[in-house]
Image (cartoon, rainbow, N blue to C red; front, side):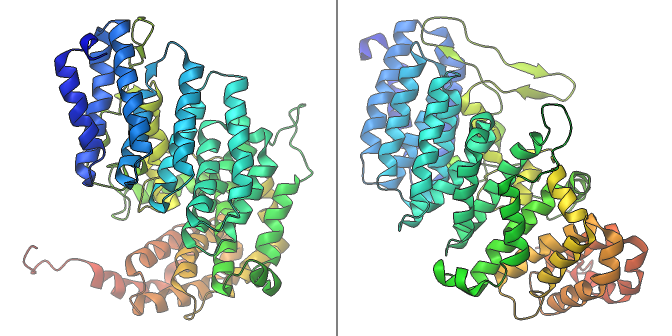
Length: 490
């Protein structure tokens, strides 16, 4: 095998084996970048035999890394699999089946830190499968497994299950829609999990799936369906009736705060889906805010943010290398915007993982990835009924107190501006004064001051003149947050 490879390739491959499994995030990110670049720019110049030999060399190493007891070895194997998906394999179906089997080995003893990484890799493998039976079969089987594993005692399996539903919704929406009831069932279970990470991952899954259902709320005749699908009915009953369901908290072994947190997470996602115009305005405002993350550095595929820009990772553009000896697919540049049209799985990983970056809220992830808001008519109609709006508003404000925990408080900072944006008049009439008292009290207690001020600003943006009476209370706090001109630079 090695006789068919350039000696320089062999040396570089050996070094990549080491660097991809490094404990250092920077080293691992740089190795992934080099591997992607090699596949994009060097392999297209090689013969079919040499490319085959190179792939087989990696396949053997992947098996070795997957069976290692070191989590860094396992992460390196996942990175290698995703990178190799950009090669146009002679027998794509066989390659997809092999990589899917490799990843399932990791699932048997899943480390929590690998849950999201593995979910992203599984979704990329499935999306790269030939259209038709194989892709649908892979997704369907994984959904069925997740329907069981979301109740597993191991946190890693539960976390993986909800992450995978989100990633499938992004990359295989047509197949997911065929099993949407099952998928929503998995996500509902995630919302009632005792672990905050699982609940928040489930919420991000709801956002991705609601985009799918919103796009399909049109009947065959082109008219909007008036009857709410059962999954919408369950969502609405969850946010209206279940905030303090003591029987449900006992059944799920949740604290009251955890249960409320799950319900509020779902409410936030339904508000996002009900008002696309407000979400576009929100994104524009936050991009100009200091709270908006800078262009994404790394992705969950690499473990966590390590300060390496995506273009340095070599996944801002791509080529598909033909194992059968065919020519590589070129990158088409969008001349007007300077944005490359991405081809291949490792490159689309950049796009998919932008929405899953470690350390960012769901809103920040959407903003960083440039996700365009999609509106659900069903969600909008539900909130548009004054009775429903006030019922939901009253439920929310039962939790707006100094006693609310940090999880509940943080999601309230997202919900309150969205409630205001949906119906500024009713919000100003019934809830503005209570909102400002709650938020200003939190600011004075230094409770997430920056994010709280951001929420105040978003509320002010939509209620307009109704906010004037509160300016005298807000401005002193804002002045305290401004940098002192006389202070020496840090």
